[in-house]
Image (cartoon, rainbow, N blue to C red; front, side, top):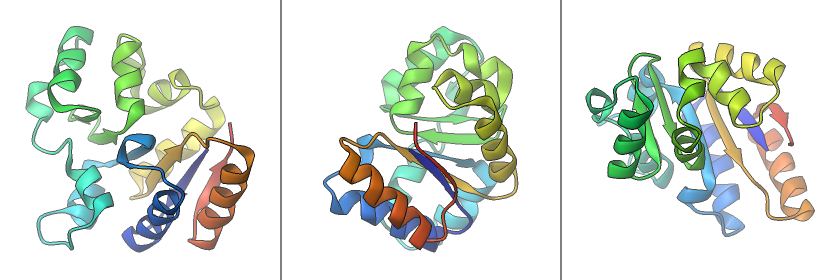
Length: 167
């Protein structure tokens, strides 16, 4: 399940809804532009769990080259978060590890290729790419059951989530 949020407050509330059901930082994918990360989750902003997750990949971009080996090595070194300076993106969560496990082939196709490679339909990936370029924050989670999926869908909507899709 994925959704896009336009501001930190909406994303924080949605993240808290995930946390309230027992989902942790390692269960949640977070994608945003580096510029959005700096604006909403930079040094001058309030400290929160979501902010910590957004900052996990900060400062490691220079260690990440374009080769699959370099990307896999960097993700192994920093956990499940990665900054992709060539694309100006921060990807945190299982998606980052999955991209590395897939040989990072999706990275050469940009964000749409990376998202499609992770199982998101191309038309949704294109919407998310456009949203991220315009300051959006994309959050995704794999619900453990239908009850959680319904709860998250409702909470994402309640918290101004847009382009909410279940996969």
